[in-house]
Length: 138
Length: 103
Image (cartoon, rainbow over all chains, first blue to last red; front, side):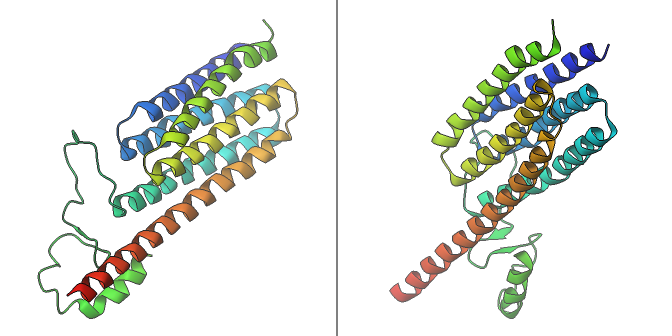
């Protein structure tokens, strides 16, 4: 019974990871690639680690697997957001057929300032605040 | 069929093929962000490889190494993105200074 469960879990996980790798090669854009790696690979890793937990059937192994899966679920969106932000700020172009760019016009490359769009009108008054905001953005 | 053989002859080759595909993108990735994401993905697939090996050889202690690899993957992504942003800012400040000198 547990053998069938292990086979199902590990096969599903391997298929998800293979699909993520194919998508990672085929996607036309850095941001689309990042979205592929965050979701599909997290699911695949979770399934394969769950199959390891079922195989050993031991409390210490299960708690270790739970810790790994929880850590990956917590950290992979954070890492994806950080690297996507860095690549947007470095001027990486989006795919030509992308529909919206919600940050369009809201980021000033010269002062490294990101806002909701209305604060750019009185530029002189905010000159002294720029330093403060820079340190916030770090 | 024994479970170890199934994992060894079917699951591990699938994972190996996906590692090769990700490595393709790592080599040819147009921007440096692609390479960082590919590195993160390689380490994450390495975690699953370790989990499969720990089943095949019946050694549950391998999973500790998987945990450490997960930590290293997150740390490297954060550090790389931090330094990418820093480098861009330095480049832009240099450009601004040159423009001011031209004026």
